[in-house]
Length: 172
Image 1 (cartoon, rainbow, N blue to C red):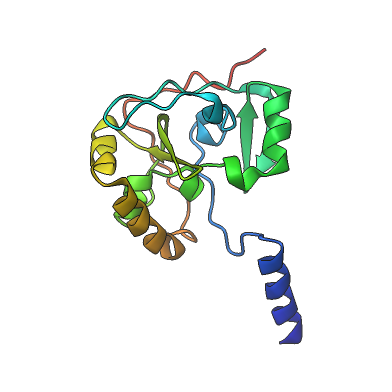
Image 2 (image 1 turned 45 degrees about the horizontal axis):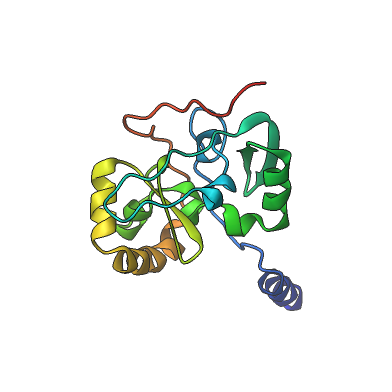
C-alpha cells in the first residue's frame, strides 16, 4: 500500500498523466495527421465564425514521441520547443474532436479545424461541428472537461476524419 501511495504522489507531483488514454493517430501514422502542433501558435486565429488558417505540415524526418504517438514538425526548432513542454502543445483530448468529447465520445479531430482557447489547442471533426462548438465555446469546454476523465481511458478513435486527406507529413 505504501509503495502505491508513493507512486501516486510521484505521478501527481511530476504532472505525469496517470492512466492517460491514447492519442488519436490516423492512417498517416502520426498524431494530428502529421501537422506541426507548435506552428499553430504562430498562426493568426480567425474570429469565431470564420475559417482558421490551414495547419502547417510537419516533416517525416523531424519528429518527437509523446503520449505513445509520433508528432511531426516543420522545423527542428519547433520540435525542440515541443520537447520542452509537450503537454502544452499537444491538442486537448488527445487530438480527438473537442465537441465530440463535450457530447461524451471520442471521434477524430481534423487538424485544419482548430482553435486555441485559454492557451490550449482544440480540434474539431467537421465544419458543421465547428459551428456547434463555436455557439458556446466556454460551455462546450466545461462539458468536455467534465466528460474527459470517464472517456480518456477508452481506446482512441479509429474512424477516419470525414472529408479530409492529410498531405502531411512532408517527405524530404
